[in-house]
Image: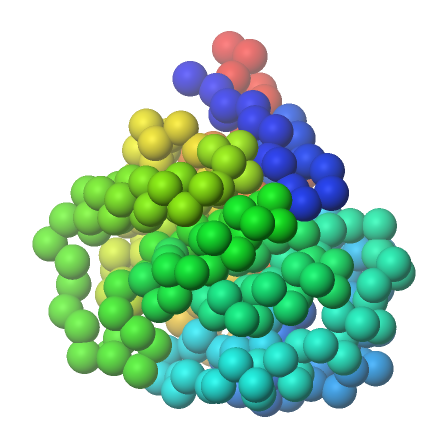
Length: 283
């Protein structure tokens, strides 16, 4: 088998997926994200960081204004918009790459799309605010459906899933059905197994190992292992190397997009993994 080719339909264009791995660069404009909380809360610093991520090779910029780290408390839409709007206004017309906004709130998605975002990355997979699918459909936006189990504030209390990949497949299939019912074009959808989103540490490695099973749903796949707690090492460099291993595994398991913080470093990793994948597929 080979990595299937798709055209991901966005608000103002499309992205060809499958020829090479697409890099989604992460920009958190939050005070409490697990890896870079507070660094880019200031709109000027966020603007500079966004330009830097594009320069380093990001194909998509994913902006998040509410943390979904384990134990994180939800924030009101007004506060999320207060963090997000100044950054989107500064970036409008300044990037060559599309902007994705990481939110589960339809109100936030609506404003983000009005301000130039082309993709909504819903970490809850339509489980927190089902209206977000209609909002994305009305704007012809791309929509990422991420698998989440429970809520960030309850993850520490959850036991392991008895059938982790089987559960993810069933849940994502149901989520896709809800999105399509809300009017989303099939070509606008990407699925994400939600590494770290309510799964126990050892099960995240199992998800990566069994990632090819997602191909049966016939949608492009996004994977976001970057700096997740199951990869944590004693040093920052060690965590980055563990992330590189997870990114390589995802690419070799036919992921179309990887969501990463360290774009320059992971671009090299993804390019090498793409070469290996291509050689394997030519055999």
